[in-house]
Length: 380
Image (cartoon, rainbow, N blue to C red; front, side):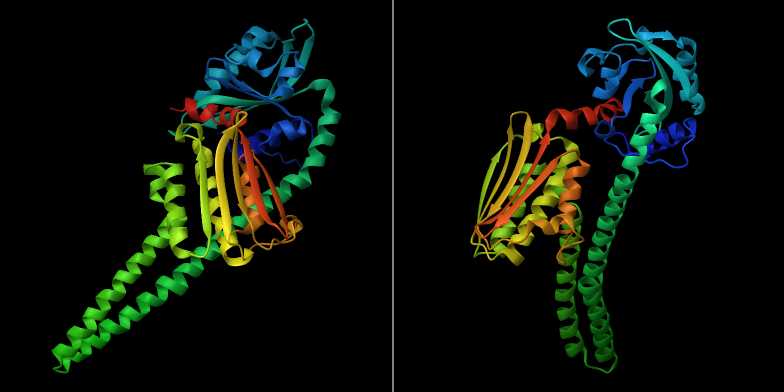
């Protein structure tokens, strides 16, 4: 997947070409009309967004696996010099290119290349962000309009991360930290009894210390599982959801939790698995602590090429407008952060709530998620 920072770096270079004072850009280039494509080291088009394809009269699927050089009228030399030598040297500079459209129309472009580093640290593909040279003013206006939205998005991501760090810090301090402090005093107490010639009393205190250590180890496992369940990597999302729901039923026996998992593991993109688990975890915690509900229905299914997650309860409900204000739930990341998780992975979240209960509805278009993963897949 392309990292947000990589696209922002490319757009920073583009802003210099256009003599902008400041510009920021987000990962979803399609939403603000920026043309972009990803090419491999041979110039093959790995993926291209609709804006870029439409600029030369094509659909994205028409151009995937096509050599970019086949579309070049003017600038072939610059393109050849950029692809392989620049990947080896790590030096990338913007250049001009003229592409031939489907109807033969010439499109003079200003192109900014940005390397995509794969998991092994080797650059084997490029992100090309470009605009028509006659359209600089329109691009300038678009970038300025998006600037404040991008800043807000970045701030919300940072805030959500800080809330999670604060929660983990509190867990360690209030739970594990206090347990270890008590164990320290118990060991000192047992040592004192043994030195004072009271070995039986000291032995009894040590036995109690062992039990406290077991509890502390359980607390470590619990925190570790909350950070990232090992079963998510070892078994997959569906077994992890079933495991979490079994524990949930044991903890909240007054709640009826029904599962409808009409999806196979292979249909769920890897990039979504942890986010879906976190959303389920947060939604179920909210129901248990705030909804006064007696029944929950959790559904995960594939329908019309989309992955749908629906969590519905029959509780008292709340004002769903809180999602769009500075509300972060004290027990976790809260509704606002659930929304961030869905939006950051290209999905849409809808929350409906009232006297009849609350419905959390998240869905992702599988084709869109898969196309985001193309560069990552080629990293091998």
